[in-house]
Length: 331
Image (cartoon, rainbow, N blue to C red; front, side, top):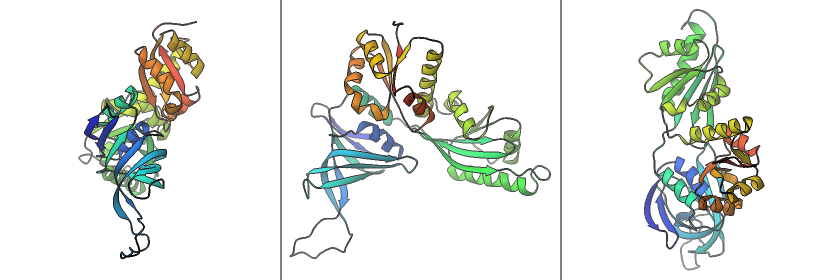
């Protein structure tokens, strides 16, 4: 993401989308009631004295909408922002912006501290990571995005013949082919020696990878690796790794009856007492809890927004979606 224009007195920030990961950040920044302006494509009605365009053909127009809803399609990286046109052709009609790289959009809103923090994070480059979780039966290939974990392949390993012969050689070749086509920093994990066998097979063809033993393979192993901080060895600033680490700390404090509280009312009381050090909240609950967030910011609490698209978000949702790490114990 790149900031092109900024005028916080008027509540305006204009950005350029540089990659699909930026769509996820914008999904967490843009809210109902905000105004979005930019060039977009729309079927425009023609007057009688003009040559009519072919059916379904669209024109590039500049529109401003008031946001009514939004949709982020994980792993397709598609962000759709829908709203009522307030400036441009066909005012009061509905229009949907399909947000994608190289677009420039102007956002007008009441910018809160957590919005600006998220925007600042989006300016940094956070490379995606590929994980190969392998044991002697299966190989799972997953991509770690900033917003979740995408399983892209699950390959069954055949154990016939000597190593690298017959079907096993074919399986290893398929794994290597898929990893090479993804072309991302690689983490190879799993129990036993299968990961070392694969590395020996792929000698000289793998670049920018680390290896770590885990108790499990498959998606269970991928999640285990994230919890243990393996992903951070490649990218210490990876968003999902940070979020899952925070949720694990929250659960650990709960298990030990430590300085923690959860549930909206309990967190609200802790904020009133000035006890909250970190407010942890699901991204889908930010809009309905703006006052809570504002009060937490006023006492100097850090606001941490957790995606509901990965396991950490699921665990936080089970705790009502709102929790806090405390500065001091409360009764």
